[in-house]
Amino acid sequence: MKKLILLVTVALISTPVIAQHLQIQSPQIQTLKAVPDNIPAWMYNKQRNHIYPQRGVYNNAIYNVRDLALDLNAIAVGHAFAYEDIVTGKAKDLETKTYQKINWVLKNPPKFMPDEGNISPTFGRKYGVLEQVFEWAHIFHAQTVDVLASSKLTNEEKEAEIEKLYQFYLTKVPYAITGLPMNMGYLDSQPYSKAFRQKYPKVNGLFWGYHWLQGTMYDLLYEKTLEEQKQAYKQVGKQYHSQELYRTDRAFMPMFAELSPKFARRFPAISNTFDNLHMLHDMVNDILASYWLTPQQKDEQITRAIWLVMAANHREMEAGKNYGGEGLHDHRFESGIPGMGLMPADISHEGHNHDNPDNSEKKPDDSQGHEGEDHQHHNHENHSPENPANTEKKPDHSNAQEEPTK
Picture (cartoon, helix red, strand yellow):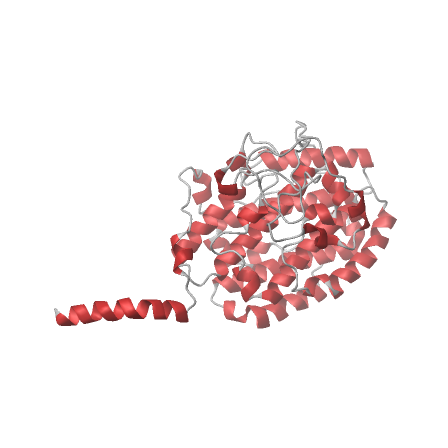
């Protein structure tokens, strides 16, 4: 009996010491949110489903702007390398060996878009649904820039096709991420938030550099001739490789509407979709980097993170309204920017895109105040939205041939 009492006493005394040594924050563990009860059954699917893009004359047209296409190919490899190393016990090498491996690929990109599932098979087996959500959004990403880079479509045809692609993305499979503005302050204030950027700043810098390029390229391509696109990417590509990939001083991820404000004003739901995709990437990164989470907790929190940004979780809600849910259903947006959800209170969004002259064109919408609760932000007002246009055009399933690579 005395031995039992002694063991219990030692355990009670040593647990806080061990926790302090490991920097485990017990309040974080206690505040982890449970996986909601209304998770749809498909989110527990363990089988891999290969998803195919929409057919169109514009497919692979991004190779018309070849340097950009190659850089996008390298981005896919970089993400896959990092995720595979994290889940196979090589996280300790992320800032050294993995970083060097990714950096080499960024400087020597593959000629064709790789299959990320083949590069990160362990990650795909462990987090198959997450990989499918990523893949479906990446396909949408790729097809929209293919349309913009196509030499076979007029500007009017490009806009109509992008609308159809968005409807195709929303309806073809259940993996669609919401196009509503999301409260970034809420999503980035989970118990595990910021773990990845603090623990792996160099690799996180690469990831945010990717997101900078993926946001910047839309206005670079939008309503431009092929020659204008090629010339513009000479400068953007130089900035991407010399500066943006290696920045570790960003307080928050690059936001789409600040990098491509013109495209975001025309397609706010698409702008929000890509920001929400990138926020999901950040949340998953943070979960995987949180050593105080058990494997089961990581699985649960990744499932929850996916569900937080799924379109099905925000059905019948509108941009500009706050439906509560501790911030989950706060769909208000930054002043005059329907394609950009509310930023964290301590982040000033003006600093995200100081090099983009289009920022000067943004005008606030002073028509009404936001609905719902007051929300404090740094240097922002809360204004009511214009609901983004949501055409009901059906996807084109024609047998048109793909645009040849140039």
